[in-house]
Length: 145
Image (cartoon, rainbow, N blue to C red):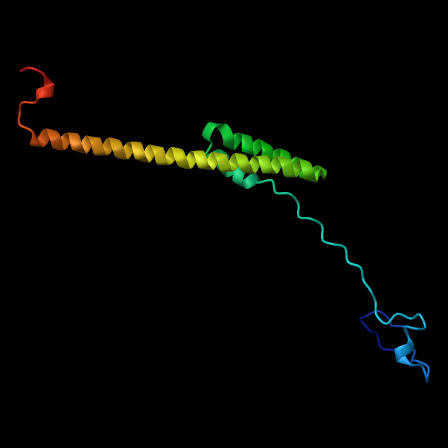
């Protein structure tokens, strides 16, 4: 009689317990009741290099070349990560992060300053035009006529 083909591995034959063997005493006889599997903790995540953020900072907010410096430190961090130097990669990545933050804050401050200056110039121009339109023809500050 031929055995049908099975897809899985061939299992060893099942051996029943001997009669009269007490399951409660298996531990006392040295047989383990359960299997203990030791699991190693997962490896720490790789350090971040902030390369995409540095690239965007260099292209859109390169204040005082901080974006370029952040990009350089990001590339150094990625190189260290590839070499397996986790502490060096973390250090360079942290420096790149702080340079990116500084460049972004300076960029936001400069944009706010430019908007404020434009608003003040526009307001002053509007007030000057209104002053000239509502004053009589003779202006004391234009000099003698």
